[in-house]
Length: 263
Image (cartoon, rainbow, N blue to C red; front, side, top):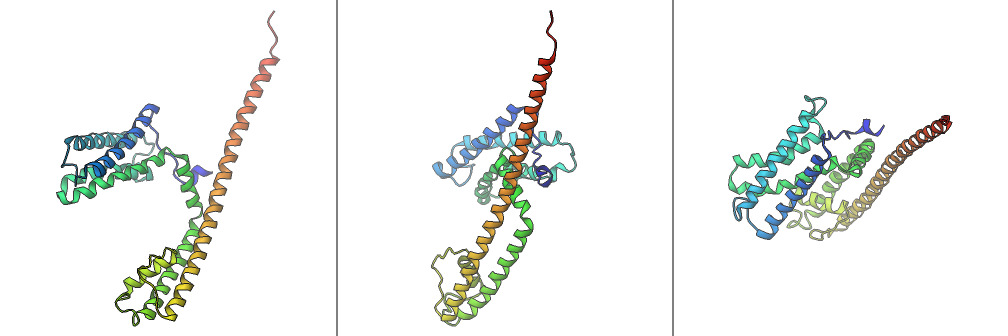
Protein backbone atom coordinates (compact mmCIF):
# COMPACT_ATOMS: atom_id res chain seq x y z
CA UNK A 1 0.00 0.00 0.00
CA UNK A 2 1.21 3.49 -0.81
CA UNK A 3 0.25 4.98 2.54
CA UNK A 4 2.31 2.40 4.44
CA UNK A 5 5.50 3.24 2.55
CA UNK A 6 5.75 6.96 3.18
CA UNK A 7 4.21 9.19 5.78
CA UNK A 8 1.19 10.57 3.97
CA UNK A 9 -0.85 11.07 7.13
CA UNK A 10 -0.85 14.83 7.14
CA UNK A 11 -2.71 15.25 10.44
CA UNK A 12 -5.45 17.41 9.00
CA UNK A 13 -7.25 19.88 11.21
CA UNK A 14 -10.94 19.30 12.01
CA UNK A 15 -12.16 22.23 9.93
CA UNK A 16 -11.58 22.51 6.19
CA UNK A 17 -11.82 26.29 6.44
CA UNK A 18 -8.99 26.37 8.96
CA UNK A 19 -6.82 24.39 6.54
CA UNK A 20 -7.67 26.84 3.75
CA UNK A 21 -6.83 29.75 6.02
CA UNK A 22 -3.34 28.41 6.69
CA UNK A 23 -2.78 27.84 2.97
CA UNK A 24 -3.54 31.51 2.33
CA UNK A 25 -1.37 32.47 5.30
CA UNK A 26 1.64 30.67 3.81
CA UNK A 27 1.19 32.42 0.47
CA UNK A 28 0.75 35.76 2.23
CA UNK A 29 3.90 35.21 4.30
CA UNK A 30 6.03 34.42 1.25
CA UNK A 31 4.53 37.33 -0.65
CA UNK A 32 5.39 39.74 2.16
CA UNK A 33 8.94 38.38 2.21
CA UNK A 34 9.35 38.99 -1.52
CA UNK A 35 7.94 42.51 -1.30
CA UNK A 36 10.09 43.36 1.71
CA UNK A 37 13.26 41.90 0.16
CA UNK A 38 12.92 43.09 -3.44
CA UNK A 39 10.82 46.23 -3.26
CA UNK A 40 12.01 47.91 -0.07
CA UNK A 41 15.54 46.45 -0.10
CA UNK A 42 15.89 46.61 3.68
CA UNK A 43 18.48 44.51 5.46
CA UNK A 44 15.98 43.10 7.97
CA UNK A 45 12.46 43.64 9.24
CA UNK A 46 13.51 46.08 11.95
CA UNK A 47 14.33 48.56 9.20
CA UNK A 48 11.83 50.29 7.00
CA UNK A 49 8.05 50.18 7.40
CA UNK A 50 7.01 48.71 10.79
CA UNK A 51 4.10 46.91 9.11
CA UNK A 52 6.47 44.23 7.79
CA UNK A 53 7.73 43.46 11.28
CA UNK A 54 4.27 43.28 12.82
CA UNK A 55 2.98 41.27 9.90
CA UNK A 56 5.69 38.65 10.49
CA UNK A 57 4.98 38.61 14.19
CA UNK A 58 1.29 37.89 13.60
CA UNK A 59 2.12 35.19 11.02
CA UNK A 60 4.60 33.54 13.40
CA UNK A 61 2.07 33.49 16.23
CA UNK A 62 -0.58 31.95 13.97
CA UNK A 63 1.83 29.31 12.66
CA UNK A 64 2.86 28.50 16.21
CA UNK A 65 -0.81 28.06 17.12
CA UNK A 66 -1.21 25.79 14.08
CA UNK A 67 1.73 23.64 15.20
CA UNK A 68 0.30 23.25 18.70
CA UNK A 69 -3.19 22.59 17.34
CA UNK A 70 -1.98 19.81 15.05
CA UNK A 71 0.03 18.35 17.91
CA UNK A 72 -3.05 18.32 20.13
CA UNK A 73 -5.01 16.42 17.44
CA UNK A 74 -2.21 13.91 16.73
CA UNK A 75 -2.93 10.26 17.43
CA UNK A 76 0.49 9.64 18.98
CA UNK A 77 1.49 12.84 20.73
CA UNK A 78 4.90 11.53 21.78
CA UNK A 79 6.00 10.61 18.25
CA UNK A 80 4.32 13.49 16.42
CA UNK A 81 7.13 16.09 16.96
CA UNK A 82 9.51 13.72 15.17
CA UNK A 83 7.28 13.14 12.15
CA UNK A 84 8.19 14.71 8.82
CA UNK A 85 5.37 17.24 8.67
CA UNK A 86 5.82 18.22 12.32
CA UNK A 87 9.50 18.97 11.62
CA UNK A 88 8.46 21.04 8.60
CA UNK A 89 5.94 22.97 10.70
CA UNK A 90 8.61 23.53 13.35
CA UNK A 91 11.16 24.76 10.80
CA UNK A 92 8.56 27.15 9.40
CA UNK A 93 8.28 29.07 12.66
CA UNK A 94 11.44 28.50 14.73
CA UNK A 95 13.64 31.00 12.78
CA UNK A 96 11.34 33.78 14.00
CA UNK A 97 12.08 32.95 17.63
CA UNK A 98 15.80 32.49 16.95
CA UNK A 99 15.79 36.09 15.75
CA UNK A 100 15.33 37.28 19.33
CA UNK A 101 18.70 35.81 20.34
CA UNK A 102 20.99 36.84 17.46
CA UNK A 103 22.51 40.10 16.34
CA UNK A 104 21.13 42.37 13.65
CA UNK A 105 23.76 41.15 11.19
CA UNK A 106 22.10 37.70 11.22
CA UNK A 107 18.50 38.88 10.83
CA UNK A 108 18.73 38.94 7.03
CA UNK A 109 19.39 35.19 7.03
CA UNK A 110 16.57 34.70 9.53
CA UNK A 111 14.20 36.53 7.19
CA UNK A 112 15.36 34.46 4.21
CA UNK A 113 14.51 31.24 6.08
CA UNK A 114 10.83 32.13 5.74
CA UNK A 115 10.92 30.40 2.35
CA UNK A 116 11.03 27.09 4.26
CA UNK A 117 7.30 27.61 4.83
CA UNK A 118 6.73 26.54 1.23
CA UNK A 119 7.52 22.98 2.37
CA UNK A 120 4.23 23.04 4.27
CA UNK A 121 2.42 22.66 0.93
CA UNK A 122 3.57 19.03 0.93
CA UNK A 123 0.65 18.43 3.30
CA UNK A 124 -1.85 19.59 0.67
CA UNK A 125 -0.25 18.35 -2.56
CA UNK A 126 -0.95 14.79 -3.67
CA UNK A 127 1.60 15.27 -6.46
CA UNK A 128 4.41 16.06 -4.02
CA UNK A 129 3.43 13.09 -1.87
CA UNK A 130 3.55 10.76 -4.88
CA UNK A 131 6.92 12.26 -5.78
CA UNK A 132 8.19 11.41 -2.29
CA UNK A 133 6.90 7.85 -2.69
CA UNK A 134 8.79 7.56 -5.98
CA UNK A 135 12.06 8.53 -4.33
CA UNK A 136 11.31 6.18 -1.43
CA UNK A 137 10.66 3.29 -3.83
CA UNK A 138 13.94 3.89 -5.63
CA UNK A 139 16.00 4.40 -2.48
CA UNK A 140 18.19 1.29 -2.96
CA UNK A 141 18.97 2.16 -6.57
CA UNK A 142 19.68 5.76 -5.56
CA UNK A 143 22.13 4.55 -2.91
CA UNK A 144 24.04 2.59 -5.56
CA UNK A 145 24.03 5.54 -7.98
CA UNK A 146 25.15 7.89 -5.22
CA UNK A 147 28.05 5.64 -4.32
CA UNK A 148 29.08 5.29 -7.97
CA UNK A 149 28.97 9.08 -8.38
CA UNK A 150 31.10 9.53 -5.25
CA UNK A 151 33.72 7.11 -6.56
CA UNK A 152 33.75 8.84 -9.94
CA UNK A 153 34.19 12.28 -8.38
CA UNK A 154 37.00 11.20 -6.04
CA UNK A 155 38.93 9.31 -8.72
CA UNK A 156 38.52 12.06 -11.32
CA UNK A 157 39.45 14.72 -8.79
CA UNK A 158 42.72 13.03 -7.96
CA UNK A 159 43.51 12.26 -11.60
CA UNK A 160 42.84 15.75 -12.96
CA UNK A 161 44.83 17.30 -10.12
CA UNK A 162 47.88 15.18 -10.87
CA UNK A 163 47.59 15.91 -14.60
CA UNK A 164 47.13 19.69 -14.34
CA UNK A 165 48.86 20.90 -11.18
CA UNK A 166 52.24 21.20 -12.91
CA UNK A 167 50.74 22.59 -16.13
CA UNK A 168 48.35 25.14 -14.55
CA UNK A 169 49.65 25.67 -11.05
CA UNK A 170 47.78 28.99 -10.83
CA UNK A 171 44.38 27.39 -11.53
CA UNK A 172 44.74 23.92 -10.03
CA UNK A 173 46.40 25.01 -6.82
CA UNK A 174 44.82 22.37 -4.60
CA UNK A 175 42.38 19.48 -4.53
CA UNK A 176 39.60 22.00 -3.93
CA UNK A 177 40.06 23.39 -7.44
CA UNK A 178 40.16 19.87 -8.87
CA UNK A 179 37.00 18.98 -6.93
CA UNK A 180 35.16 22.02 -8.32
CA UNK A 181 36.24 21.17 -11.87
CA UNK A 182 35.20 17.53 -11.45
CA UNK A 183 31.74 18.41 -10.13
CA UNK A 184 31.16 20.85 -13.00
CA UNK A 185 32.36 18.25 -15.50
CA UNK A 186 30.33 15.34 -14.07
CA UNK A 187 27.13 17.39 -14.28
CA UNK A 188 28.10 18.51 -17.83
CA UNK A 189 27.58 22.15 -16.80
CA UNK A 190 30.98 23.37 -17.96
CA UNK A 191 31.35 26.93 -16.64
CA UNK A 192 34.62 27.37 -18.47
CA UNK A 193 36.51 28.94 -15.58
CA UNK A 194 38.76 25.87 -15.44
CA UNK A 195 39.76 23.67 -18.36
CA UNK A 196 42.50 21.06 -18.83
CA UNK A 197 45.50 21.91 -20.97
CA UNK A 198 47.46 18.66 -20.95
CA UNK A 199 46.55 15.66 -23.10
CA UNK A 200 46.18 13.44 -20.04
CA UNK A 201 43.94 16.02 -18.36
CA UNK A 202 41.69 16.24 -21.41
CA UNK A 203 41.44 12.45 -21.55
CA UNK A 204 40.45 12.35 -17.88
CA UNK A 205 37.82 15.05 -18.54
CA UNK A 206 36.34 13.08 -21.45
CA UNK A 207 36.05 9.94 -19.35
CA UNK A 208 34.54 11.97 -16.51
CA UNK A 209 31.73 13.66 -18.42
CA UNK A 210 30.89 10.56 -20.47
CA UNK A 211 30.58 8.55 -17.27
CA UNK A 212 28.58 11.40 -15.72
CA UNK A 213 26.11 11.37 -18.61
CA UNK A 214 25.72 7.62 -18.19
CA UNK A 215 25.01 7.97 -14.46
CA UNK A 216 22.45 10.72 -15.01
CA UNK A 217 20.78 8.65 -17.73
CA UNK A 218 20.58 5.74 -15.32
CA UNK A 219 19.12 8.05 -12.65
CA UNK A 220 16.44 9.22 -15.10
CA UNK A 221 15.52 5.65 -15.99
CA UNK A 222 15.35 4.56 -12.34
CA UNK A 223 13.19 7.49 -11.26
CA UNK A 224 10.97 7.23 -14.35
CA UNK A 225 10.30 3.58 -13.57
CA UNK A 226 9.56 4.36 -9.91
CA UNK A 227 7.18 7.22 -10.75
CA UNK A 228 5.40 5.13 -13.38
CA UNK A 229 4.89 2.33 -10.85
CA UNK A 230 3.48 4.76 -8.27
CA UNK A 231 1.11 6.34 -10.79
CA UNK A 232 -0.12 2.92 -11.97
CA UNK A 233 -0.90 1.93 -8.40
CA UNK A 234 -2.63 5.24 -7.75
CA UNK A 235 -4.79 4.83 -10.86
CA UNK A 236 -5.59 1.24 -9.88
CA UNK A 237 -6.66 2.40 -6.42
CA UNK A 238 -8.91 5.10 -7.89
CA UNK A 239 -10.43 2.61 -10.34
CA UNK A 240 -11.11 0.19 -7.49
CA UNK A 241 -12.83 2.91 -5.45
CA UNK A 242 -14.94 4.00 -8.43
CA UNK A 243 -15.85 0.40 -9.24
CA UNK A 244 -16.85 -0.26 -5.64
CA UNK A 245 -18.95 2.91 -5.54
CA UNK A 246 -20.64 1.99 -8.84
CA UNK A 247 -21.42 -1.53 -7.58
CA UNK A 248 -22.99 -0.16 -4.40
CA UNK A 249 -25.11 2.25 -6.43
CA UNK A 250 -26.29 -0.56 -8.69
CA UNK A 251 -27.13 -2.79 -5.71
CA UNK A 252 -29.08 0.00 -4.10
CA UNK A 253 -30.96 0.65 -7.35
CA UNK A 254 -31.84 -3.05 -7.78
CA UNK A 255 -32.98 -3.29 -4.18
CA UNK A 256 -35.22 -0.25 -4.65
CA UNK A 257 -36.73 -1.66 -7.87
CA UNK A 258 -37.42 -5.05 -6.24
CA UNK A 259 -39.56 -3.52 -3.51
CA UNK A 260 -43.32 -4.09 -4.13
CA UNK A 261 -45.31 -1.02 -4.92
CA UNK A 262 -47.80 0.00 -2.27
CA UNK A 263 -51.47 -0.10 -3.28
